[in-house]
Image (cartoon, rainbow, N blue to C red; front, side, top):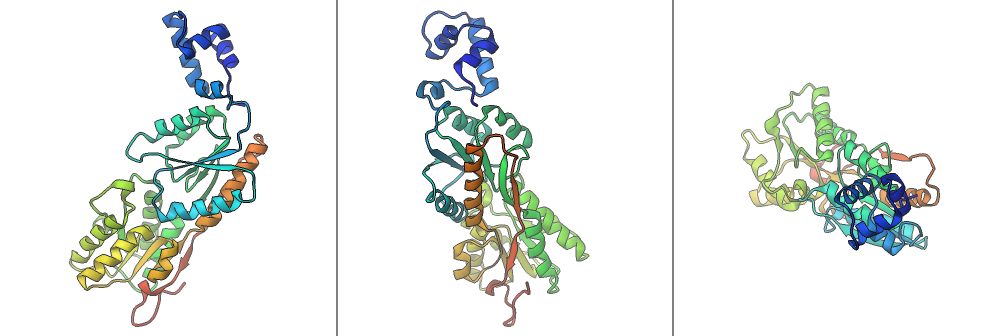
Length: 337
């Protein structure tokens, strides 16, 4: 149960009237009392708007999805799965778009404090464990998608294993100089995928060369854009000698990478990551994440949590699958799955 004005008053050792005056900014309140009330409110995740609207203590049948960017094939696929589940239930869907260029934790706290929904799903919002832990004080149903923290329900994919499978498929074909078209290393998915890339190389007896990890110059959306993929592939094709093949850390980047190869009149085998719908039409070999399924089951987990706050935490980690298409074809053959 979310904290109320009564809880604040009791913990701060002041009257309910004093708490009300602090939040309503009416009447005289000593600086000491005001500071104590605000400190306690912050500790328990209380926000006055929630009390004023009565949203902290009654259901409003709204689920809020929080994403760092909405114009992205990956997010749209997950949102499709969320809508599939909500179409069976009597819940409204609200979408809140946070800025990846601002303090993510502060933005998440702002969303939770407002209590505008009964439950929240965070898609690809990557925070440190200590930050997720501090957000437990808000005591609201939360499910994470494409992220993991043992204190919240979550649905994710083993990114390290996915990258490993992609690179192993290339090393099994005898490729030695395999570039990784990456993104910002501060991104959790990239850290995991880089670990899988290195593991596959090591297993094949290939030494990791940091120069083979290549990114675009633009860092918006952590580098997961078509333009970043285009820029990175231009760099890869200028390397001497040219890499034998490329593991691309997302299908979105692979779109740009394929265009760069087309413009240069060069081609190397490439494997993407995600298996967005567009990948099939591009003939892109890729690592499939069950995105729509992830959205569907994450929504079910959240609804279960909303109806039963004391249920055990649910952690679902999918194993990604290699999908072989024409982008890895060589002399008419494909990378074997």
